[in-house]
Image 1 (cartoon, rainbow, N blue to C red):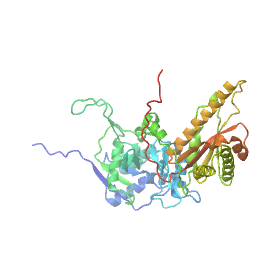
Image 2: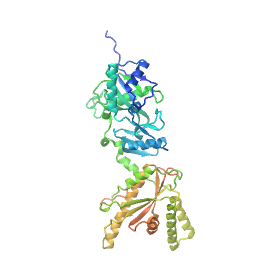
Image 3: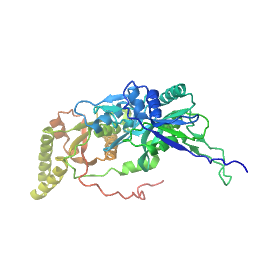
Image 4: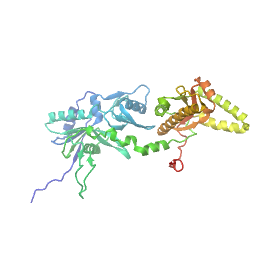
Amino acid sequence: MSPAVDPPGVRITAVPTPHRVRPGDDLAEVFSAALEANGVVLADGDVVCVASKVVSLAEGAVAARLPGEDDATARRRIARQHAAGVVAEAPQVLVTRTRHGFVAANGGVDASNVTDADTFLLLPDDPDGSADRLRTAIAERHGVTVGVVVTDTFGRPWRLGQTDVALGVSGVTAIRDERGGHDLDGRRLEVTEVAVADEVAAAADLVRDKGSGTPFVVVRGVPGGRHGTGADLVRPPTADLFAAGGPTAALRSVQARRTVRRFAVDRPVPTAALTDAVAAAVTAPAPHGTRPWRFARLTEPRRSRVLDAMAARWRGDLNADGVAEDVITRRLARSDAVLRPAPELLFAFVVLEDAHDYPDQRRSTAERDLFVLSGGAALQSLQVVLAAHGVGTAWISSTAFCPEVVRAELELPATWAPIGAVAAGFPEDPPPPREPADPTGFLRTY
């Protein structure tokens, strides 16, 4: 009878330590002391998982809070400073792409398990390099060949909860490529690539949590293969549909723009949302390669003064039209109920100084219309981006009916043509979902 052979399996061993890692600490020394204290002996082929937080602490990858900043504000600011780009931003979270290529909430900036309340941890500067240095140091101290995975906790698209993933990898298979192989039924595998290093990182997290004091975990039994790096696991931006979402995401973002007339007046609109919206607005198409869009952000007391002057002009126009006084009062009250209490009020303009001068009315009118159309495109982009931030808007056309009043109150030249006011703020009540639009009747083919 053949001797019994143990089936393949993986063993996960936590290696806790009471030591609180600080800048300048030797992680290999801290790990070796933890091994001895816990009676753990390494063997060839073991994989040592180390939390990125202690790597960052040892390497001094930290940033400081500014005076007066709360945790959320500090994390967002630091994440922005160290980001290669912003992937998504919402009131509750900022998702960035780090310069390593990782996509993470607040760029992976964290404050947990940091003894200094004013210090925040960045991700390690070079996770693969950190893993490689620790692997070499462990081999020199213990005479064994091990792999090292630097792990961190990430969220995942479409899934609740978080799991650990591999940031840095050395001496371990990062991805097992099964493309070209076959399944049980002989079907050729076309896309299967297994993220082995991420699976090892997630397995290590089963035996620790943030309060366990377990920065190190030893995983035994990980199948061998071609060694890789953490960089191998990063999807290149050109192949990342999550960042853009494809046509469906673009359509939904446009449909998310809703006219909102009642705002949560005690909830300010973040300045970053306004600047993002204006940055999008000024990408609109415009005649002759010009950039004719301008936005005026009205604050008190100027806001009330301008609205008072506009209301006086409107009242005069309605009186001249023979409209009853009670009707005038109701119409003015409806407009005031939107514009005056709105957390933000923007006046939009197109500047006509670069419009071509034609000797006839036909072409002059067409030229002005083209600039105004460009302003409409800018207004749409502005409101779509604000909606993506959760901010509702109402475009009110009143400024276009009293351009000389607006220009006089804001001391603007005659070339500035007002094209409406945008009241903005978080909705007092979320608007109901918009039914998909039916394009029938709006598109004709000739």
